[in-house]
Image 1 (cartoon, rainbow, N blue to C red):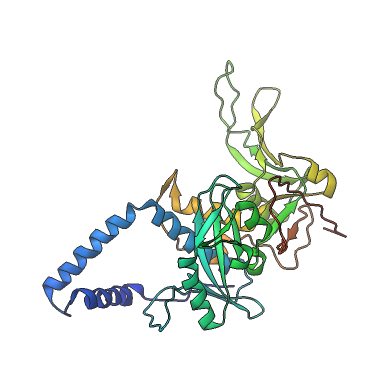
Image 2: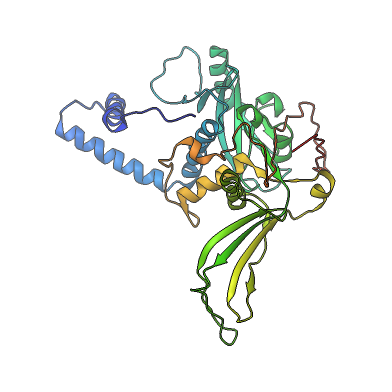
Length: 367
């Protein structure tokens, strides 16, 4: 289980920042006027940064990627790379992260946040930008990958090297479709998760507290317990209940209108909410359907932790990486909750066309 290493940022980072700015503005240690100028400069910079929405959203996704990479449980180490002093004889740019994968492979990752809505509109990386990142990677003998968060595509994440982009004279480009087709998020542990629909939550009333609605108006309902069902089967195992609850909260299936069950006196006995995939064909063909991608579900959870409505209230959280990841035991054997965990491999020979259709057909010997 990966955790943040203990640090003391209040002691070291303000002093390091003072040192860095002091080199630029000739601050002297212990000089009250310089201390004041430093604090005023930081206050002005902080106010400017907090009003820069592009900076806020980009930095949040950069922080989230590190949490995801650590929370998936595949990487041995996740380290912020673009911090601290650096001296170089080459013109370089430093990627956001260094990752050591489960097999010991090292990769650099540069995180990007994309707001494109059109699946065919190109997302562009200028060569003046990528060449510096690639030079840094070349000096280390470590490849650099580009993690793109497609916010308007239901928070989809992709990961690919420049070789999966289309090279032009002065830039590299990709599209949402190309990124999904060449996606290598499986390297860090991202998976598609499937189960049998529907998933249902039933809130059972405390009948001593429940009242009948009068004249089709309001009644009172006080939940006493809840039950969760998968494909009509009640889930009783606690681990399976936690997994099902997570999938219902952060998965992609559509939620039905609440259905009330009342007794002969008009008192509500229970309220049920059902989640099902919008298109039934995948379940009919394969015996299950995907409810979501783990990275997307983690992103939804992170957004709940760090936003209120559409307003960002925090850049990070004090939770550990594993608190953001769905905890499925490695030896999991579904009882009432069968699960499929699918690692999608990239199509490295992908050729984009104007008419793209996505479908999957999974052949499996068991659940």
